[in-house]
Length: 286
Ligand code: PAF
Image 1 (tube, rainbow, N blue to C red):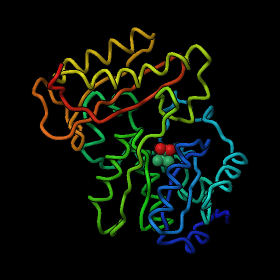
Image 2: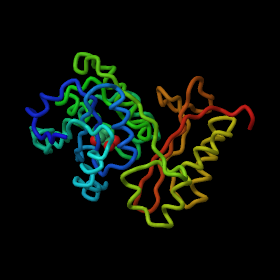
Image 3: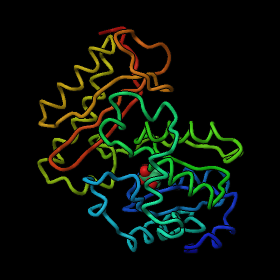
Image 4: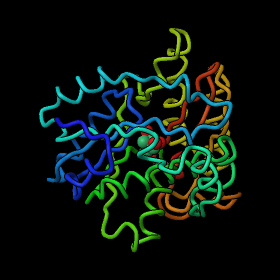
């Protein structure tokens, strides 16, 4: 497993299957790597905690950095990645962080990034920073394919739209979706779960419970109310709990959407923000 640092180092991995991460790797990330290995391309994992996707009052400085453990976990895979890309800030943003922040603010976002009452309202600028860094990692590594988890569903949709919307830049790059890895009680695996204390960890399962209960709802309004109620009953503060068409993420208003839908939740437990989502459709048996 080679360690890559510079733009020049990346020349050797063009055509790879890229798994972009911010480190603090858990079983969910390892599942992404296994998925990437199945594509038949050499797997490259990038680890970079991207400052431009964190707001000024968010947890950039607290975000866990566990490089040695991450490398050990990657080496323990049946098929370890051929390389781990560990760029410094100067490689990702050669014009400096301030210029990068300005560039992120000026980016034209796909409509999936700005749908009301989702991430953009709660974390303004977050998805612009994600698009910026993912685009940059793609430019540096020129992967044939890249794998993202469904846990960050809006992020995944936005990246899919970014790639589809700019063939001149991204060519035939294929984005693979990987299902959310879950703990035995259903909690979606996340690098931030380590910040939950024992009581919060117990209550955090309410996200998955809410998503499962919403499957019995006959319409969007009922599903959204049911998810909010479940979160509140367990002492979580919902930021959003919505059901949306899975492709556009457009707010459905009171019209039941046609086609595949997604129920999406963001909620706070103390200082920890958790997100999750699942496929949703109106239940005929409610
Ligand atoms: O999902 C993440 O870990 C990050 O948002 C990503 C895609 C690696 C970009 O920094």
